Amino acid sequence: MIKVENISKTFRIPHEKRETVREHLFSFFKPLEYETFQALKNISFEVKSGEWLGIMGPNGSGKSTLLKILAGIYLPDSGKIEMKGKAVPFLELGVGFNPELSARDNIFLNAIILGMTKSEVAKKFTNIVQFAEIERFLDTKLKNFSSGMQVRLAFSIAIQIESDIYILDEVLAVGDAAFQKKCQEEFTRMKKLGKTVLLVSHDMETIRRYCHRAIWLDKGEIKEHGEVEKVINAYLGS
Image (tube, rainbow, N blue to C red; front, side, top):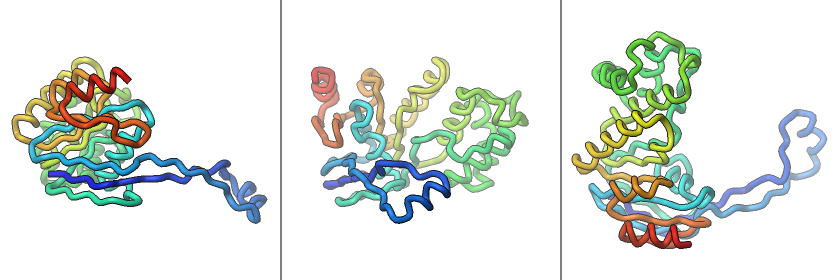
């Protein structure tokens, strides 16, 4: 179960960048000027156990910021969140990969970063490799993998983590058609198991297929919230 009450988030954006030591020295007596950007404004909603909530909206509407707050990456400026159960975020697949290491080593590295023990990774190693379809490339350095292969591997690792809640950000926007089909099959399995899922997607058919309810975010605010078709119609008609 997830309960979000009146969360807001504002970022400070500097007007100029200071990247070199010289720039910092010459601007020592000139304080940086900032402007503020409110990414989220008083967001409230609930997700019941076993429910899938679709989140839609244009780029820059606050979708990713919301998921990062739910994943614990950002803290809200105000409001509170109650979350019962372990949550696994699928936000930036492959973060933590080392391109100079082999796929084999990266499986252990990334899985441990995501919270698995070494023995758990060893037990699920074959499943990860088969799902990612990289049997012939286990000892190849990751820097020689295509971006699609890296995403397949990252997703294959993440789905092996047992969790109550999954936070998914545009998972189906990457990879080829065959990989997307595998993702969809995994979504179906997760739904049958009664997992709770927050799913950000620009694909309305994906939201229709899996989600029980939906939210439309725009400029950091909830514009519509409720039955999937009602929210989609409001969003597409805006």
